[in-house]
Amino acid sequence: MFVFRALVSLSLLLGTTHAAAVSKAPRARTVVQWDVGTWAENIAVRSNGQLIVTMLGNAEIWAVDPAKSTKSLVATLPGVTGVGGIDELTPDIFVIAAGNFTLATGTTVPGSYSIWTLNARSKVVKKIVDVPGAAMLNGLTTLDAIKGDVLVSDSGLGTVIRVNAHTGATKVVISDPAFAPPAKGIQIGINGIRLSKGPKKTLYFNSFGGSSFGGVPVAADGTPTGPVKFIAQNVGSLDDFALSPCGSYAWDVANGQNELFKISLKNGTATLIAGALDSALIPGATSAAFGRTSKDKNVVYVTTSGALAAPINGTYVEGAKIVAFNVRGL
Image (cartoon, rainbow, N blue to C red):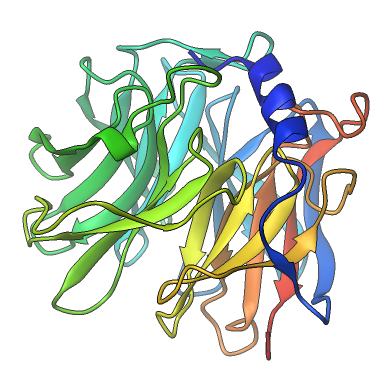
């Protein structure tokens, strides 16, 4: 189970990371913010520039217009209390992982997880399949848009599951010790996942409890074609991330340390871009995504949890928010 107190301890332990700070801080602005007690968990971007944001603790999905700094509730999923990983399968059709998560106690319910789709145009949500064998579905990335296959990480069991959004068929395709939760501390192993582009796919992943970022080559069906390898280690309590459009970096967030990193996929160098353990810039950062329009293609949008799991200086929390970083030239 996910216990908030453990994240507080982990954030203090990992407050000093093995990363060089960027010489020039990026321009940042708060796009929108919710009330205190909210947790924005993940983010995806429509081709029209609208952000689709999932919430933990209230099973809501929101649409955000970053140009106008406005937000609107799109849907609330019935029968679950939290919405996690999200990715676009086909234009404006998003696949989502959801389950039962209680913010007040910081615990999740194994066996409560399911996969859904959202039509961003009609705002219709549909449950595709229950995944009763899952302990904590978390990250999600599209594997094959034509076939309808996505990959989902199970942070509790340390596995990656292939799910077909058309048929509901599920299969564990990767199970590796590198994905497993740590023996002590927070019982969260593999967290955010993203697939590289191109014919030869690499599944990149965060190990939350292991403070590491890594990758594994995969075949068209999501099964591994080589060993799982860590690319950067001792970075921090890494949550979710975005791959840069150029395909050279992961823009990664550390939840417990309130930080945004740029990690080289080539050599694993982790550069601290913004944030700090005692900073309220991106408190409890949870995920990141690049803009998709000509106006924000150099912008990284970061979602936050308001530091609910690890209050800044032990006391400060705020409402979930989205912060836009202009990273052009960084």
